[in-house]
Structures are given as structure tokens and as C-alpha cells.
Length: 275
Ligand SMILES: Cc1cc2nc3c(=O)[nH]c(=O)nc-3n(C[C@H](O)[C@H](O)[C@H](O)COP(=O)(O)OP(=O)(O)OC[C@H]3O[C@@H](n4cnc5c(N)ncnc54)[C@H](O)[C@@H]3O)c2cc1C
Ligand code: FES
Image (cartoon, rainbow, N blue to C red; front, side, top):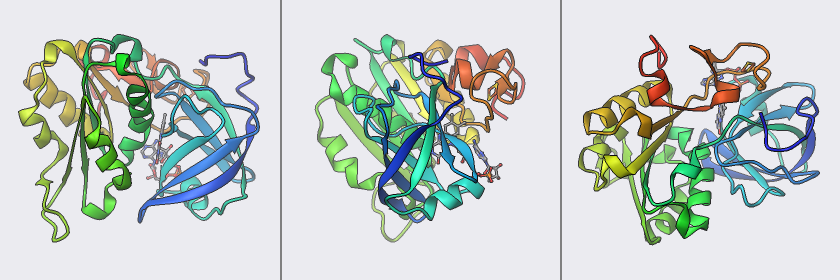
């Protein structure tokens, strides 16, 4: 469930330090928890707005900075709407961390392919922080990212920095042609046609809308990736976050406990696992 002995029913108080506008519908909330909140890349927290409710989010910040948690949120409904209206100084609560996180122990000596769609790049950014911090954490990192339009590209301010790094390739695409964009056009799966990677020595990790995950998994299988080397972030609705309520199961797996990143080999044969 977690990596320490904290009581995960009780939220840790957190102060909102800053709000960064990423796109018209996505904001990053910079939080200072009352005590350091240690997490592994890919683990998630339940973010509580006192008096309103809570929702699960995977921090987009570095696991090496547990005293400063960033959470990047797409506005979609009750809790996220209210979050988007908050200003620095607001008080929130954090429960967790929950889930297993990305299988980073498998990555040293391997290439890592990161495939993101829309706000799905947010959970993957904590993995990028992990991979960038230690040259031994992986051999090469290939980031392939898609959004609907130029305005919806999340973390655009950081792409130059990512692309300039040794061992790192970064490419972005938008779904349809746009006057403000002279880069690649097409769904994110079209970026996977000409990868300079050997599927036998690469792990692929993907996060985005579930329909995108399905097509990414199929495409990766088509170009030779073994299902054992594909991990998908299944960010479905959750409740308890601790394997108690049964709200988040796919076959025998509880996403909150066994995920939210599942190995495709484990779910490939489960009917409707990806919708
Ligand atoms: C492990 C995990 C990590 C997540 N990480 C992030 C993150 O880093 N950034 C981010 O923006 N979102 C993330 N999400 C999704 C986020 O939790 C939902 O967007 C949020 O719960 C919506 O709450 P709401 O009250 O604003 O919307 P609601 O009022 O509950 O719902 C509004 C609409 O959003 C849909 N919706 C609700 N929950 C989800 C969901 N989990 N996935 C897709 N659609 C949903 C509903 O069906 C409805 O159509 C994550 C979800 C999980 C399970
Ligand atoms: S959210 Fe309750 S069992 Fe997973």
C-alpha cells in the first residue's frame, strides 16, 4: 500500500504555495505538506479539499523533493473545478502515497520509452525527474507526447530543457493541423512508427486517456514490443485507495494497490480491460 508506516486514513495538511497555468484547462498546484510526503515515481495521493471531497492524483514533481509536492490537474468536474479556483495560501489535505509506482528497478541498462497523452504527461513527469536525476537509472529515455492542439500541450515551458539532455529524445505531436504549429501532426501512435529503439531492450510506459492506452499498447505489440515490456497507467475512478472498497478492479487486480500502472502482459487477455 505504501512505503512507510503512516496512517493513510488521516490526511497530512498542506499549504498551496503556487499555481502554475499550464494550459487553459490544466494547472499545476505547488504544495508544501506539513511533513515530507515521500513517494515513488508513479505512486498517487488522494488530494482533499476540506468540506468538498477528495480525488486521486499522481504527483508530477520529483520523488526526491518530498517537502514540495506538485500536482498537475485537468479541470473536469466538482473537485478539479474547485481546485482550479484556489489561490496561494489555501489549505488542503494529502493522503497516501498509494499504489506501487513505476517499475523503475527494471530500467537500469535498458532504454525507456515514455508515451504520454494530454494531462497523462503529468504522472510521467515524476518518472522523468527520477530518470534525469541518475544517469544509471536507464540507458536512453525517449519521450513521445501528444495533445489535441498547441494550446493543450502540457509543460511546454520544459520541452527545450528535456530535448537538450544527453540520452534523451523528446517529440511532440498535435492531433490536427494548426496555424501555430509546424511540428508533427497526428495521433501520438504515429510517433511510434519510426522509433530508434530495440523492443527487446526497451521498457515502454504510457499514461493518457484509456482509449489512447489501448491503441498505444496495440501499436507497441505491432512493432515488436513483448507485452511484458509495456506498462500502462490506468487512472480510473477510485475511492478508498487501499484495496478495501473494490471500486477499481480489473480482473484480479486492484488498480489502487497493484497499479495504477499495470503490465500489459497481465491484462492483455482480460476482456474489456481497456474499455
Ligand atoms: C491513480 C490516479 C491518478 C490520477 N492522476 C491524475 C493527474 O495527475 N492529473 C489529473 O488531472 N487527473 C488525474 N487523475 C484523474 C482525476 O482523479 C479525476 O480527473 C478526478 O477524480 C475528477 O474529479 P472531479 O470531482 O473533478 O470530477 P467528477 O465530478 O468526479 O467527474 C467529472 C467527469 O470526469 C470523469 N472522471 C472522474 N474521474 C475520472 C478518472 N479517474 N479518469 C477519467 N475521467 C474521470 C467523470 O466520469 C466525469 O465525466 C488520476 C486518477 C487516478 C485514479
Ligand atoms: S479504490 Fe478501493 S479497492 Fe481500489
